[in-house]
Length: 483
Ligand code: V55
Ligand code: FE
Image (cartoon, rainbow, N blue to C red; front, side):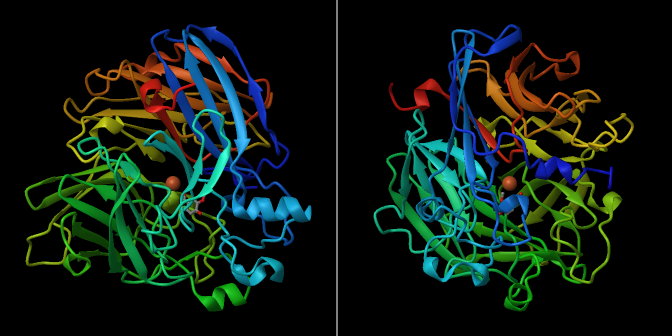
């Protein structure tokens, strides 16, 4: 078993909170939940509803389960429901799994041919009072943001012609639009991509088509005032791989990476692809532009970060090469060169799942928080090392700090919560799920966003352990439907 940097158990935890749908009120709290916090923190975990039909159980293939922590008057409730995808509805009717391997339609039961394979398992996002449960291989699934009842997939009244909508769609705080993109838009493995914007009223305002330089996992992107920015890293696939029942993705060390820059008011042909040597990156910190210059912040690693999508050349997983460090890539849309203008490492605290104060998406942000893998800290034998600390940086002063969750804890993606909707940038709290891997109990920990090193203000306790989650977002009560 590998204990470095992240143990495989962290993602599999098969027996933890399996198939649980529940409502809890007035959770047990150690410390004090800030009474002015009024809203909900939504988070998502993949959790296969039926046992797999194949030997493969890639964590990314689990059915989406939304958790909703409701904050009101210093009390916290928790509700958890499955995203009732078309896939899950078909499987529940049959009483067994019908869909096979992750992103491999060749492994499905013939009865479900043509059905949307999405699991809606990556990101919960509220926009226009609707909760979208997002997965990058399928359209957005609409849910009720309070009851978590599923309404179904939307194509925005027929206006969305592509087949996918990124799990890393973002709300532009300037326009209020939901800005999104998708890849493999005309079917699995195709090079067709789109950039989309949805108004707060739910109208698809644009769908701009462009072509990727090669097929790969286009997981996240950047939004600036004037541009959308697409990192292309060599987590690749092919029909040969799918026919051979290999994992959908594998990392190719021979390919360059690209950063695509498309003016938000432009046409697909206006995209420019900037090129850099082979390396890897996944979740975007933020992006902003100053004139034609685009600053794009992202944790970058030398090699593959996902051991369950192994290198295509068969080389073993390299934990040191998987460690990602926050980095700033700068390119100039007006440049004559297709090279990056500069590359700057921002921190020596390696990790992933970066967040900012989301009210600063597309603007020059001052603060970032992310999950750190602190190799100097002890971990629990037999369970393995997880992401064990929270990192903080202030770009203006250069101050960087961290909070170690402790030897018995693994951490999930943090989320910044403003002290109040109008509070200055970074003035507020971090909420972060931590899992005790010894007692198998999870907590939602609340920290002062500017003093994370002082430790939690409050620990909200769940009477069970959550599965490893992907992404989470906070929404003030004013963004939620009434009732
Ligand atoms: C990611 C997660 C996914 C997926 C593709 O974190 C990429 C990256 C949870 O599903 O399908
Ligand atoms: Fe993600």
